[in-house]
Length: 147
Image (cartoon, rainbow, N blue to C red):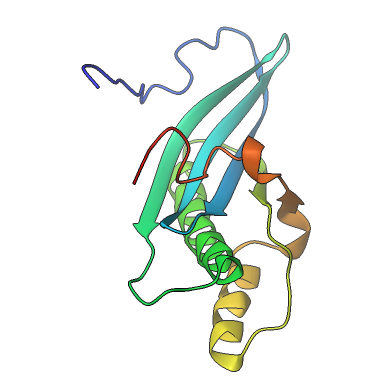
């Protein structure tokens, strides 16, 4: 990549009155990595804008894990990241709501993993989670890359 810019002025192009701001986080995993990405959605009186805010990714551990387990780890870094972003922006921007998107389904976990699940539920309420199929998920770590 020769040139890549991410604007830090999230409201530079917004000339209209802001009606609401929301955070949307996406988490996904592949056999090689898992990742999370956060976007700011700004709704104005005449339209809306979407801005990239932050992302995190991790290479999968050398000890092979199942895809559901990696999806769970993606959800964990997602909630940690979105709660950090919400806290950082909360002083400057009134965040109306946040939504986390994933393509994994909840299931029963061993006690060790259950502690992580409790952290996820503490940082982001259950009703803030939505389904997003893998091919439409911008957090899919293998999109456009060969690892």
